[in-house]
Image 1 (cartoon, one colour):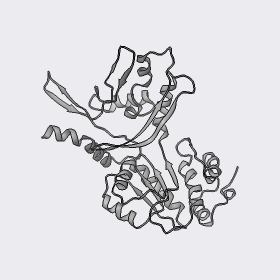
Image 2 (tube, one colour):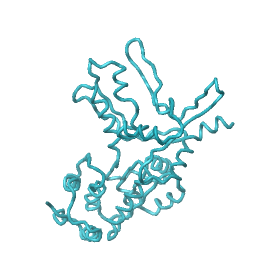
Image 3 (cartoon, one colour):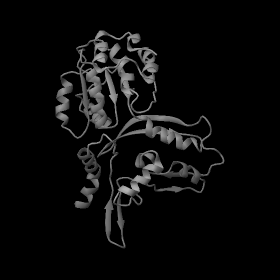
Image 4 (cartoon, one colour):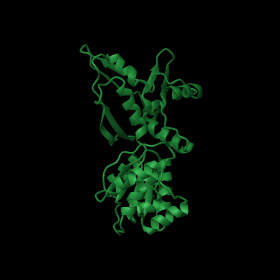
Length: 306
């Protein structure tokens, strides 16, 4: 078993680890350190609580030389505001004896305050995709000097889709062709990944949909357990919301979507409705999740109220 002394860390970093009470690396930290220090790309998967944040932070901080430039040199993208706070806290603890400047940015807070903080200079930026896009679009945030990019916590839903497709795909054909690309719309920004595969000749179009439905991003994982909890706790039945609408062609092709942010009308009851939601985790702040729902509902409310 290695110790952190074997990593030949800088004195400030070693002192920070000692303050935190860390003496031995976890398997993911041990496996990733030398590879990341060598400047190679790494995809790491490990269980929650095994120290993935420290696994990528240690080699990045070890190799990050002092600089007075204002624009960030390290960008860490995470999916939620809660994870921004968590990662920033960890990075600040590791950099307590260095001059590295760490900043976290996310939506739901004053963007002008964040612009001011960025203009004062940062070395490591932790950001959610939507707020990152907004700041870059404003030209306050310059990304041309980024040396290291970390995309954190994207594996769960991605692996769920890959697992779904592997059931009906030819061996070795399941591939991620788009990873965490930012797509911007009038009301929201989406971080989108695309998974493709070649379908086995014995699988029908209906079989493909059966393997992938329902969408894990709308249920959570594992799907069956998550849907059981949804059935017990949600007061309103989802109906077509989070389901799918699409078509089959005579040639056997098909195209289906995920039903989100859609206005439904029940003619027999003269009843109009729509549904929105956000991803709830153990670290979620209910008030912030509610604010996110209001943003998602904004366009539909505007149509109906006006």
